[in-house]
Length: 437
Ligand SMILES: *Cc1c(COP(=O)(O)O)cnc(C)c1O
Image 1 (cartoon, rainbow, N blue to C red):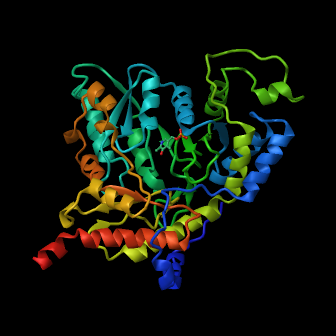
Image 2: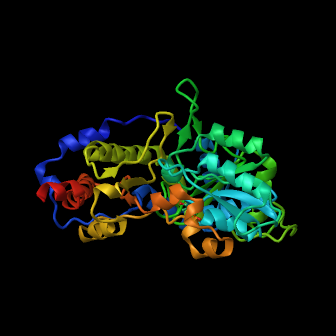
Image 3: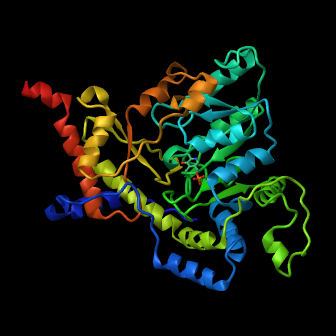
């Protein structure tokens, strides 16, 4: 996959906006709108007419193209990223009594798949700027596992076996640092890359770009949920360079059968199969893969459009003193799945939830990524986590709002988002209040 830098596009768009486009009073901007073109529609129709609806030639083609796009060796398509993560921890041998380090700043799926295996997700605080997992805190949590001083497990023995980093919003973590941390503690790494297609990183400007999924973890799991950077409606992909892991994941994705349905029903495969494990029903359909193949064709083009929206947000909101804009890094290629702004609560007379009410009143879609796991009853009550264990995430959660960011955004929509954020900040700025008084 070829990347191009489009740093100038956002500024150009702002310059081109006429006054007319800046004020569209009744405009409603959804938080997300999938970018589905005629090509996706045509390919789905062709697939429906082909008579092969479930896992078959389209899934094979999607797997091969996806592996090529991230420069990974093996790709196994499944029906969600959650399924990919579940099969990844199973294939790698996670079992009861094991502990896995999981960022508290993540979606439900990252930790629940550890619970599926009766293992323990040990939550880790986040970096206060990127929201990604803080490896210094991961060190502290490992130490607590060793000393048996985790809140809910006093005296109980746990074996730390793995870590599941999440690249929040599509801004990749430092893979070198994760690998060093993992090898120091003898942990496997499975990536939750639900936001990170296409994303890449490099240690410094002299080194080559490495795609997320190229060689960044033992298994890298992607999501094609409706609002992700490319979609199949529901869908996911496990990418690995290990043939053994890929085979285990594939086997377990379809009932633990020794041959998949594609193999069974074509001349390539035998009519016979053998059940070798109690597997799952996680296979992707050809109808979904048909959408995926077309989305993949346009993935970099859609990323560039999102990058242009992000650049427009950067240039047009740089001077708002009541918020800070998300970090970027010259040694990352950002997928721009999310654009989370951060409220400076001491500059504002309203809190995050009231800010959200104002966005709603102004018909601007939003989301919050996320209420950290330790603030959900499952993790607070079962494991005894409290705010004080995660100071950075507990604070960040009260300040963050993700703004609309997608390839199909119109210039009017982008302008409406920015004008609304400016309006709310001006109306509730503490500075203005003190000047007025
Ligand atoms: C969306 C998401 C998932 C789950 O993806 P599905 O394909 O819906 O299972 C997992 N992790 C993160 C960080 C996500 O944002």
